[in-house]
Image (cartoon, rainbow, N blue to C red):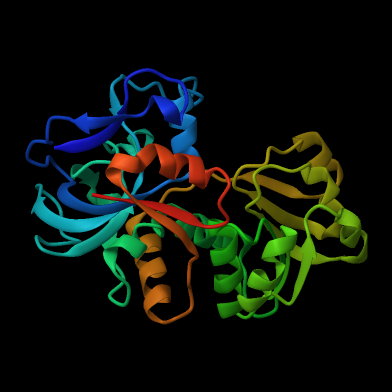
Length: 308
């Protein structure tokens, strides 16, 4: 089968696009999926460069990718949430127990798979799993509701933009920051206030917010602590916290490890079909141009997808 793999750690230029053995029959709790498309996430770049090795050592060669959308071809013992022929979305990154998703066929954990949204095609759906579940998991942790005021940092990106939309659906007031050329886009998603992330002077004018969803690529979190009410939570997807500074500021600092479980994926699909969540797809590449997809994802303000 066609697959995109790394045989040594390096850069996206080192991706090998070629033939690999097809997976065997699914085992306990697994699905065999014919992949329609996969998407590029920051986690995939960490895999390619080898920066995950200290946390989760991977044996090479390894198929890259985590997000996928496709059709179930076979189910293993103990799988009862999907059936053969179902269109599904999910995560099968090697660090989460999968075997990578940039391939024509994959073995995916059923616990990290859900039926795909019915209202969009499978290629577009491939952009949803990690970004969507990251945003929803963070909003659950922040306990966002109709009386909440939250800040979303990095609101123009894949996870941040979903966070804005889902928080507004929950009735929250949303204050956001984004790149200057993304501000109109973030306003169109429903954010009540949108600031340029380069100029942080707005932070001094915002007080007593109930939580922060930090979907940025990494900022100085201590700059934003003064905005929070006492004992409020600051959930970051990538930013590292100074825990001593957070404690001194009375902030509960949480570095999130997203677990894209079936219930979260199903909620993402439901919100898409309800018209609550829309994502920005920047480009779609055939598998033979996977290197270009990685390069584009590094600068894109939206999702880059790879089809199989």
